[in-house]
Length: 225
Length: 134
Image 1 (tube, chains in turn blue, green):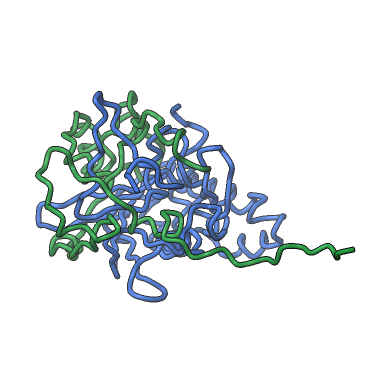
Image 2 (cartoon, chains in turn blue, green):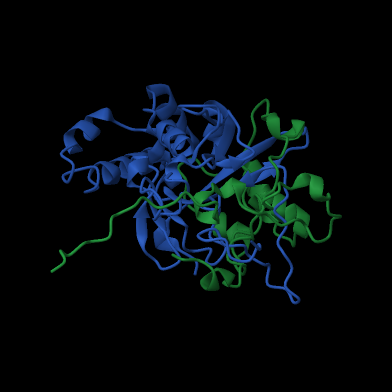
């Protein structure tokens, strides 16, 4: 078996001539479905609104077919496993810190700590569940007041995001949870505004010898193609 | 007359093909610019041996780590433009500084570390069109 064609997990080359194998012998390898799309930066490989449950996430295949992540085999998993159950990194870790752009609130909230629900390796399901849980945390009154003090329009932006989220058909009328969701009030995800959609994750190594995952969220309406 | 006999269904055999392996068990390639570590790093079936996690990789950041914007999120759009947008509280000054100062070419090793071993966003020439079965 060569390295050229390995089923659903392609081996890319960086576009040079002669073709050079891309180095993948790195300290932390990422699952190929989690990275920003190497073919089209404006088309994330996962279609997921972080304000919705990870079960709504879909993988966009090379043929532009959307597949649920819990479908075994066809969506890209192996050994009868769905993508959801594939390890998020190689080697596997039992604790991953994820950072996302939440501005100055990062100092209050800290990073997203991902730990496996089962076993000792963080899977893609653990990663998405952890991100979703983090952003579903309700905002406290003190946090809302702090956010409002940071900018004149902040409170109205928060409320606007909250209203749009709670009237979204996917979490509103279509699921019958609109009133329930409405009563839950503001959540952290409302601080993201329209930038709630998965773009990808990447690794950075810090000067003190540690590493972290960085989460990119985008607004698909302002997509660069 | 012989009765129509349908072939009996049999479960698919468990083959050691790439489709039956997890993504982290697939054959890998090594950095062409680095010396090959030799056959000791490969199993008999050609896959990369399980890598012993580095101490660096095992440790998590301490203190208050900050989000690091992707320095090359698009082949032609600068990082500062790509990551600019409306947030409720405004971006952390450290993130803004990083987004505007890191938009420069990365050497292949640094880029591979950033992407987790894969190509940068939007830079792949579409090799997968000939390989992927999607």
